[in-house]
Length: 140
Image 1 (spheres, rainbow, N blue to C red):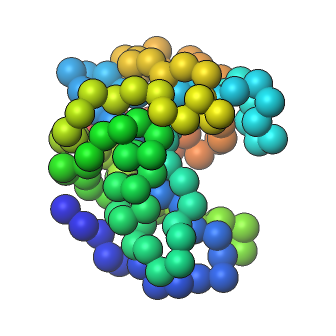
Image 2 (cartoon, rainbow, N blue to C red; image 1 turned 60 degrees about the horizontal axis):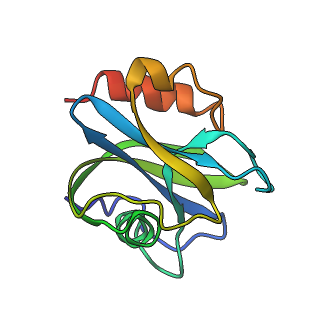
């Protein structure tokens, strides 16, 4: 399901983030130690919108590049407007084709499934993860 609400080109950097959900667990990646931002922290998958891509189109492209999967179903979980620094939309990805694998070893040293309660105890990439975890607790 596409979300076109936030698809216009903006001078503010725009990002799409995907949280894969399967069997009561979420998939996260541990960022490599030499990453400029948030080294050794756990994060979700996604990246920067290119050109006039919608957030959803970016999500599909990034998850193909990073995890080797084709997104079949995703819904908007939360939109963060931290202008002028950044805009990003987080999606709950509930159906995909392919088995997720770490195709972006320059970004994540390992990927792993966690129960939500386990993930909440990890060192994460940003304070906004608390909001994402809360939204995931209420996601159906």
